[in-house]
Image 1: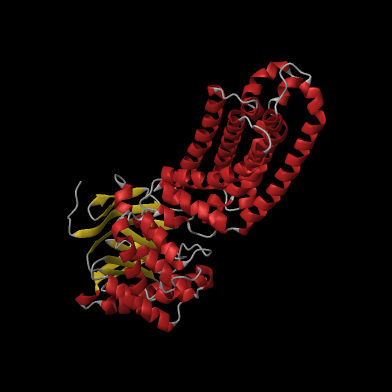
Image 2: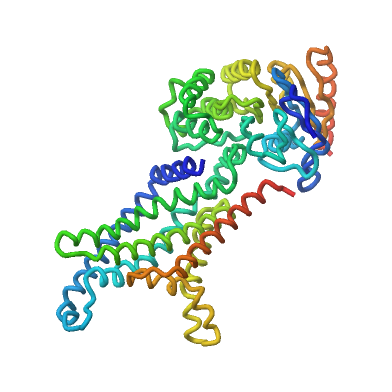
Length: 249
Length: 247
């Protein structure tokens, strides 16, 4: 049942002009960033060659091109997730789900997987650009796979946050803005520790702390656990919210 | 607590109080296969709330609902699998084609893959939607949209069909079409049909229940020769309503 709902959500996003406009704009940004990073690499390549362990093309593109794009996902994912429940409330289609023999968990997971599917395609566009260099040089597929995994985990967390806010309001744009604000807070929370060392604990809550390793080619279980907790927390809150709607008292 | 298997619906003293005295109080209903119950009441009487509780969309604060012997509270998924529900606004995705939408509705209602195509074709025929099955829902007229809404409620051949003012906004010809579909469906199902039009209820239904201010004022078969009583009661409620409005 979860896959039926995921497929419905995925197709609904593909039918939406908003998704295609967003994908086109993002592809332009990705292409521009990619070419710029490539040009920078060509400029500094002679200097890199002098180092004992010079950074390869994949490592360079991963940190200089893919890592900044992870931040862009903070804008893209909430925009894709914002309509998931808001539109159901606004168009009064929620009773179709509420009166069907499906659990709230299936509904939320299905919607999550459907939106995440589109986000993965977007992340794949960015990674395919790096992979295209395989035609000319040898690409470190391990580093690229780790960067891809990091971006997918980031996207999954942002979609979970987006779904939760979407379940709170009929206004999709409010859901998107609220999600972006929370993600920005989670992104910037670590910088508070720089000004005040007593807030050092906040660094471990910040997204950049946990995503940076992926772009350097190593995957730490603590980082995976951080993203898994974020996803479970917000999907869980979303399930609680939707179940509460059945209880009008 | 077990209920008689003959009852498709058994609702006992369901109560759901909403803001400012709205909602329903102590409603008890039972329906058997072949029953078409007309749920009559003025706007705000509690018809939609009653249907939303029976369909499992909202939970009652008090009371219990059994669908085909299954308790809604104990086993909500299996109970909901036996219900078809058409809310007052049909839950339609305007960007979907009619056929795709009905296939989705059938999958959500656990129709087995082996019979899915047959059941969708069957409901397309019974709701006379064959000629628009490839059209986007947004392009359909109000009457066709209502029929698609009815088709999604019937696609899994539920034991209990709940229709919340299904003839709202339909022209007389479309209303006649809707009545025919409902009467055909009643051969194998129990149906609750909410409306605020007494004539319509008398034409379609074989049993009438009157709701007023969230309470059940009357529930009897139309065969028992007391349709005049219902008419008198309903007229009195209408009069009371207009007196309150004038004050």
